[in-house]
Image 1 (cartoon, rainbow, N blue to C red):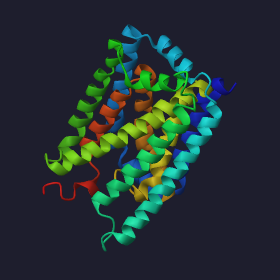
Image 2: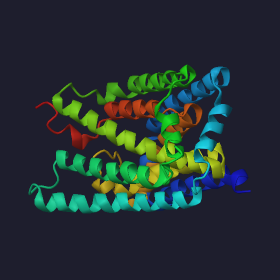
Image 3: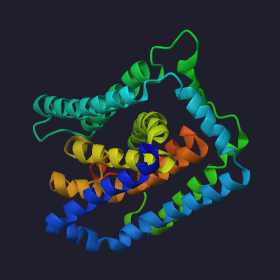
Image 4: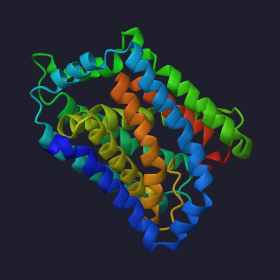
Length: 312
């Protein structure tokens, strides 16, 4: 029953989280109304990418076999308990960013947290709560003798089947379309050591987030809610996480008006993008494709706060 209605429940939750802020916040209605064309522009390349991914997997893929490997990798894992741990880890992520931001603000520069310190908060918190601790208590799940703990990382990171790299096609097409549509208005940042350092930092952030949200969370939710139920609910959690950490996060793109407003905008931006990331993962189970997509998006839409000193 849970698996059968998983998609309906996940979509209903997403609709409530979008419609609620839109109804109660005039600023949200203005943003949605004034940015409707922008939303269409940003969503359309990802929709096209999803269609391309679907066609490639249908023609050349062996997704059923890959799904069986995922189910086998999850065999023996207490999935519900691990999802509970993941919820606690997300709480830890938010609290860590709050505390580190406060510390760096108090002991940092008089004018506030510098871009370098702000990126340090983003990096340290994600490395700890989305990567190091989850790998210890979730993916290995204490099973180190019989090798079960290495099954999922082998599937996600050691991609040897050529057809699983066909996901490069929808990624490249989506990135090129988004770049064509938005770079005339925003422009690309010029090359610099600062930019390269930020790209390395965001690659680490993308690695942590994609392993946690797609490799760990979505894979488990798919077992409970079905493929699309897992994709949608993971996208909702992904977006809500950015809504919570927005005031303390160097890479967040949300306006920061208030939490209700940011929740709605997070669902319309990070949530929509999360559907594409989730579908890529469901089709190819190749973490490197998701990381490439995330880093490309970061380069195309560089957070304004991180452009300080980029020409130095």
